[in-house]
Length: 279
Length: 209
Image (cartoon, rainbow over all chains, first blue to last red; front, side, top):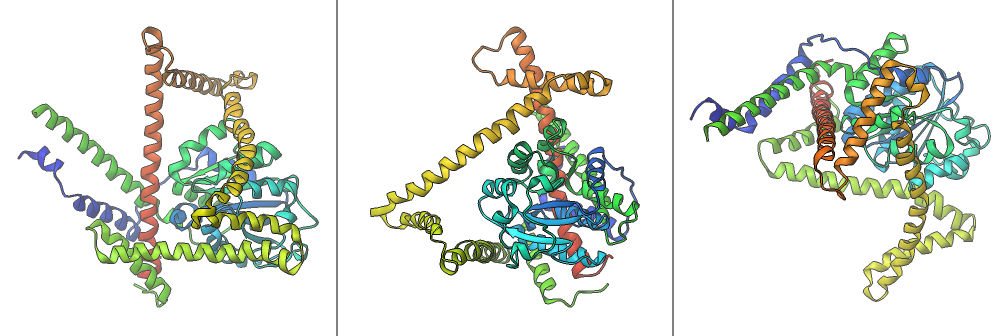
């Protein structure tokens, strides 16, 4: 058995071990690799940064704990950005399993900026119906969400001065791990009511989101953990936070893991062609 | 090293390790964690549905505020349960028909507008694009990509001569698209692993800060 035959029959658990070492070592001893902030991340940052103080920012939690490592750091960073700009934040979601994450993020970030529940931010929770919910907000937020997540009546929440619709919300972000998600908001809220939509998506679906950027249906895009790290960098650079940056801490490991996968793909291909020639 | 004293962190860490044990091979600990996850997800979904929707949006208006109009959605919902009784299971078609009719009526124009008309507009070389060299270049590449890929999927002609060449170009664009998607997929899967490793090393073991 020659070298390439041995490579082709290597135990997959050995590869798992190599990968584990490659991602754990940079966490214990960071390599300090430098990245750059992408254009799409900057667009989203500017869109939020350009909102007037006191404007509404609607955030839709369209993901569940499975996508937490990629999308939750984005959520925390966007909340920090919004609160430091004194925006009024409305959080809801189209995924039932995202409810806990939406609430947890607000409970983590709001105290950092001394924000008051009901006045500076509100959590509306989840409603079934997907398109009915998205279209309903365009007609009446009060009818769609008669109470917040905790059962407080809409009229008792000082953040809402009267019944609001998309006309009162200059920008919204869908943090999306699939359907329903940013595509739902584009189809039913952006196209029909004209609200500007930004998105934070898992890396798996990032490539699918690009066509919506070139048509202007999306304003800014955060694609995967790398973009989450870029956003963390931007808000820290702007002096908006000094909190722990979960995505940034993982970037060295991510880079090293990618390097190993590239090497493995190359070795696999060379091995395949070498063995095919031998046959 | 600063190991967490939180029982929930320990539980979470152990369940993570149970799931990771599948990398070595299938085992009872992995299956326990998998079944627990499914059970907890279903229980959580039922609880949130009741507290966030069923009680405030149906029980309260119908039984506490006396809004009898809410009897209609309640009846439609109950008809779904007729599937468990073969003699009257046909009744389930009523809410199904309502949902399909509403869904199609709402979705077709919206999806057509957002995913077809807007995308066609985005593929056109508009005067604004013609004014900037970089946009023009990408616009032309995008237009060629769209046309050649559509021609690859056009099966009414035999792909020979010029059509075959254009369809071949379409395959190249498709392969570039698949490559980009695969790269992003690798990044996503590594990110998920990293998230768990960060939890184990930081929140549970306290090895990193």
